[in-house]
Image (cartoon, rainbow, N blue to C red):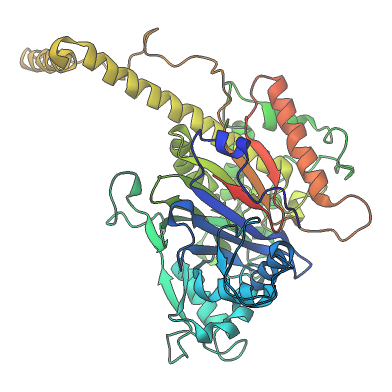
Length: 513
């Protein structure tokens, strides 16, 4: 496991020009098939230090076992008697451990510092570690909390803690009481909080979350024609497979290049005409008419995780498929929420899956992303960030112009003049001109046509849930990273680079935001 990401580096701090506010510890970076390395993260607010209950687990396919491995690596070997030891290196640096062995100290972390499990969806590679680890929950002082959308909670109750697959260790339906549930509202709870914190639901010490549903493919019980939009010819189907070497250019495909880099604006939403035609032709097909043929979409979740002390945020996705081929495209709603946060400098980290490299055809993505689709999704985000930054620039300019008037009344006077003009026009019986936008730009207020910074500058995209091919040769993660960087180079050559930093997640590593 890596040891070079345990403490914040200068580049980490430089992402937001402040001391890091959030630490994310990767316990599992894979998506299978090896059971020892599947999705699992820990998140903590730096302001909360190492208070009890301060660690939030986001998914727990791999959980206790990687904590043991981390401590086996970082715990001092010379400790021979049970005296409290404060680690000085590694993801758990600064935490006081009472025991001498890594195993005993890992259990100490599990029982005392991890209070809540935030689950994106109920697939086994995202909660199997949690289920197995419940055997150690009996000595905790209070139940562990599973926080998730109601559909995920219901699935966990019905299919895991049902006294068949696993004992009912929950506090519902007559269970033992080791686990309790916190049912979250999609989009957050607008009755809670205020300002930037409105809608965020506190799930752990110093951490609030706002969940959004995303699509993770279609159930296998759906009609075959509904399992993938490939029932309509896919604009990517003609793309030759990537050679898998991780070196050299992505496979050429004119249709794909048009989708990736086409559009009229500098950061226009990628592939819009092709995507829209494709979508319209799909939903208007005979197979999609009538409720009896409605496909069964697999729900997953994307979580905005917010540090209450600094308002800093990270965005963590569960498994997700691209909107361009989804029967229920919903990721763009997440990007709309994320764009404003990036424009205001609040969101600097995105953890998102990329399960395969580009050799995986659309028809067999099984509700996941590969590099070409991840880049396309990030282009959608980039276009929204450009709009959000322009809106923010205009708002600032308007406020500045109002303040520049005598006694700050210039803006008020202009608004009063417009109201009187409309009133006179109404009384004279004159027809009004067609309504026009009240937003007017001038050289002093318009945002620069070509910003010196690409839209996702300062955002780190950490790739998770990579499925190991278990074959000889380079690991698939090397191919995925190479392909992402090559796509970014193509966009940069056209002056439309995203500007984000790509990093492949590694179990045992820390990420600071």
